[in-house]
Structure formats: C-alpha cells, structure tokens
Amino acid sequence: MNKPIQDNQLWPRLVVDNADRKPARQRKEKRNELQELFLTAPHRLRALDEGISFLQAWLPGFERVIATTTNECAVTTEIGIYQEPMVCGNELVFDNEGISVRFLPSAVENLVAVDAHPARKIPPTISLFDADGATAHKCLIASLSDQLAFEVLMYGTKEKDMGSCFQKQKRQIFFGLSNQGAQTMTTRAFDDMGLSDNLDCCMIDGGSARLERLHQLDAGKAWTIDRQVIPHFLRYVSELRQPMLLAVLNKACLQMKAGRLDGIAQHDSVFELTLGANRTYFDPAQIAEFWIVRSGSSLSLECFSASGACALVLAQHRVPESRFNASWIEILNSLPRLHKRQRG
Image (cartoon, rainbow, N blue to C red; front, side, top):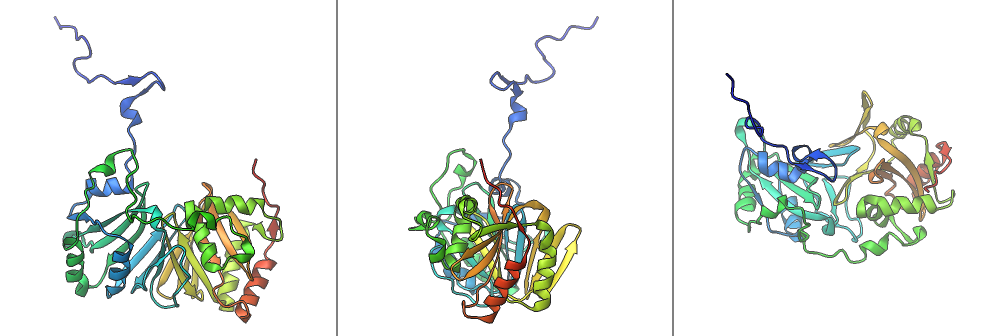
C-alpha cells in the first residue's frame, strides 16, 4: 500500500508574501546589465577605480575602436578614433572627424574592462554603466596594436570592489564629481542657451525636466510635429546635403556626429542613417513625441520616448549667420505642426 505523502515532501514550499499574494520565486528581481555581465561573462573582467580624467587620457590613445551609445529608442555606433571626451557643462569642442562623446559625471557609476575572448571573436571592451546598472557607453578595441595598451589599462589600474553591485542601495557615484550648475541649467531661459547647453539639458535626468518645460512653453518657442513626416524630412535633408548635428543620448552619455547625411536606409520600421563612419538606427514608432524647439538663433528637433527620456536630437552646429543655419530653420519651420499636448 502506498504511503501518503505529507507536508509536501517532494517539492519545496513556495513562500507566499501576504501583501501581494505572489510566490517569492515569481517576484524575483530582474538583473540589470551590469549584474548580468558579472554573472555571465565567459572571460576576465575588472571594474576600474578611476575617474573622468582617466577616460579623457586613455580613450583618444586607441588607434581604432568601435564606440556605441544606446537608449530605449535609438543606437549610434562609429568606427574610428576618439576625440578628447567632453564633460557636461563645458563648451562643445569637436569637428566632423573622430568620435565625439560627452559625459555627465554625476550619472556614471561604474567603469568595467572586459578582456578579449578569441574563441568567440569578442574584442576587448570598456563599458560605462549608470546608477541603474544600464550600459551608458561601450568601446570595443578593434586594433590588434592596441591590445598591449588595453592590458596596461585593465591590469595596471586599481580594481574596484563590485560586491555591492548586487545590493539594492545606491552606491557612491563612480566619478566622484558633482556637476556644478547642471541642475540649474534646466531652468535657464531658452534664448540664453547655446547648442551645448541645450544638449546638456536633454541629457540631465534623461531630459525629463526639459520635456516638462517644453509642454509649458508657448507655441512660438516649441511645438510638436507628426511622426509621419520624419522619413520625408530626413530624405529631403539628405538630398539637399544639409549639414547638421545628430546626437544619441542617455542619462550619462551623449554621442554625436556632425556632417551631412550620406544615406538613409529603412529596415522594416527601423531607419539607418549614415554620416561618414557613423551609423545611427532608430524606430520612429518607438518615439512618443517629436519637438521642434527654438533656442537662441536656431531650431532643433528633439525626440522623446514614452517614458519621457530624450533619445535623439538633430540640431544645427553652424554659426547663426551661416546660410546652412538659415536653410535649416526654413526646413524645420515648414514641417506640419500638431497641437501641443498639455499634461494634466
């Protein structure tokens, strides 16, 4: 005769929290990208206990890299050599050549170097992570001549203890720098702001304060346009060979490229924009609001996700007196406007 099984002897008990009546195993928190990297990386990696000056000194020294910046709606990648990385609050200093990045020090928390994995054909990488453990920027070392330099970077610097990256509490900001003036920048008058100020405001707190201000401005300062005109706008700008600046950004990093659109390709709903060695991919359907913003003597097209984060910016980097700036303003002014949505 079969012996009755008592007290669930074959299977472990499910611990139920009476607050939400869900099994504990179902409430398991999802790992962020930083945690996933440390748990699944098949090769050597180290968190580096270094700061912004370290990146400014090392990144331009690599002969050939692949630099990538992503957010929930767009990704931009470029092959080449870094220009000296910029910091939020400084004036824009860059040209059409090289890889241009701009960091918000107070939003970056960890810097991780991952060694090469020849069997899987994975090159050495340097990744920056924000306070939420999301990848803010990634640098892949593509040149064999840079392998020794990378090893010096990885093993010749002080290692950071990453045991706390699996704890819930926020840790001390990686860079250890306060971004002076960053929080007050978002409240400055639009007419007093230049291109660098506007880009920084789109990056601070993911651009949430910027979007709130746009909803409060009158229709002469900021207005929304229909997403359906975006493909036609991009093709028209490409045909005219209109120079512009394109930036993909997140809370901690902004990667930009200035120049003319060399080509536009569409893969289903995703658009691929080519500017020299730069490739930018985005899906207009994933962007909730397209804003034309008047600031100073020019206009910019700022794209915000459903979560309120600024994902993509197209702006004019030429001087106000330039004929290219005049034609840029004319093009953006000609795009059909939508009634600006008011928030409750």
